Structure formats: C-alpha cells, structure tokens
Length: 82
Image (cartoon, rainbow, N blue to C red):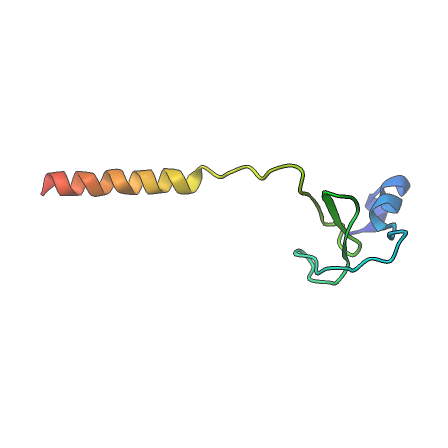
C-alpha cells in the first residue's frame, strides 16, 4: 500500500503501534507477524493495513445454496424422465 495515497491522519491511524507490548499474530493477507488486536473486536495489520472487525457478522453467501437447489431439481427431472 502506498503511504502517499492516504491522508496524514489516516496514515497515522493505520501505522500507529500499540501502546502496550502485545503478541502479534500472522496477517491472513500478507502473512507477516504484524497483526494485532486494536480493541475487543478489531484486528489491524501494521504492514499491509488489513483490518477485520469481528463485531460485524459475515454475510452468508446464497450462491452455494442456490447451486445445490438447482442440482437437486435437475437430478429430480432426470429421475422423472427415465
């Protein structure tokens, strides 16, 4: 990520180090040991600015359910046609 694209306040927010010594974890995006927990639900990577807020649930994808339903319909049609 290019630092110059970010305004100075945002750059300081992303790259500010934690006040207390913490155990860093591996970032799922850049694989460096620079991921730390900013507060109870937010994790931030100091290297690539990856952020994840665990307080917000992930949206469930409807696509796998739709594909399974379509497969089932096609299978039933083949059985009925035979």
